[in-house]
Amino acid sequence: QELIPISVVALGAAATELVLPASLCVVELKLRFQEILGVAAWQQRLLCGTDILQDASTLADLAAHRQPDGSLCMGFVRTPRQLLLTGTDDCSSWLWDLERGQAEQQLQGHGNSPVCLAVDWASQRACTGATD
Image 1 (cartoon, helix red, strand yellow):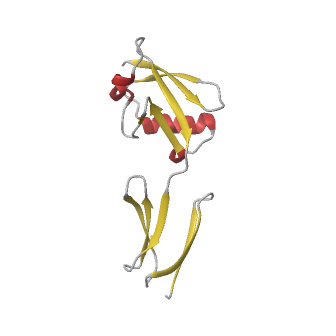
Image 2 (cartoon, rainbow, N blue to C red; image 1 turned 90 degrees about the vertical axis):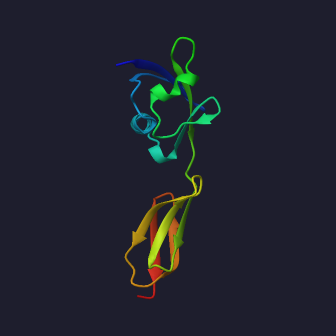
């Protein structure tokens, strides 16, 4: 199994040097950084050049970004995701990822449509209210 040397640079921090299998997915790399840096995986953006790396990509998929010695250089940026919580007339609420324009999760539990909601994004908690 091929191993790839990786150098990851974050603003204001020393570079993190790793040697990882080429089959490792970006999302798995983010989980390692969560342990190392204490930044939640969902807040991480990894970049090669000007490309934001997709979670499903493997390190092998990044061949175009490799240095002449075969290593990868990545940038690490902490960015809160842009999320939106909506209430709908089907008695549920939806959590949307605005960057991807997709619903992430349906939240159910009311017998009537939600009429109010509050979100504390820092603690990742939400509260909805309905007339039921």
